[in-house]
Image 1 (cartoon, rainbow, N blue to C red):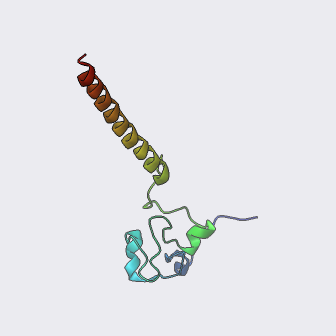
Image 2 (tube, helix red, strand yellow):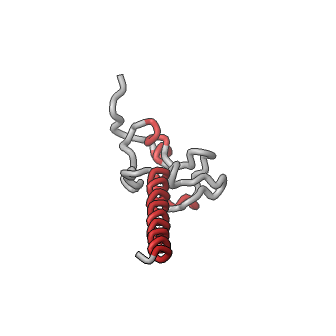
Image 3 (cartoon, rainbow, N blue to C red):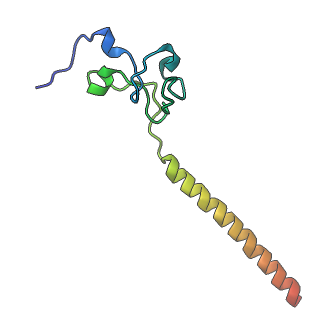
Length: 104
């Protein structure tokens, strides 16, 4: 049965890019937007240490909390809001044109 580790080797705590394994200084402790070697988006797939991936320690606290709405859902909602805005403008324009045509 698995037990929680009491001591961890320092090599297991080095954060690496999950795509290519780069562990250089250009990762800047999770503050870099992209991996310097392969260009992996570190906001979507943050650099993690072996200990984090294996569950030996808790996930790091400096990672962003999961968003309530994923980016695709927010984009979908924003598109609908823009569509409804333009549809409302078109309806108002049609009402104005018909009222001008029939002198209501």
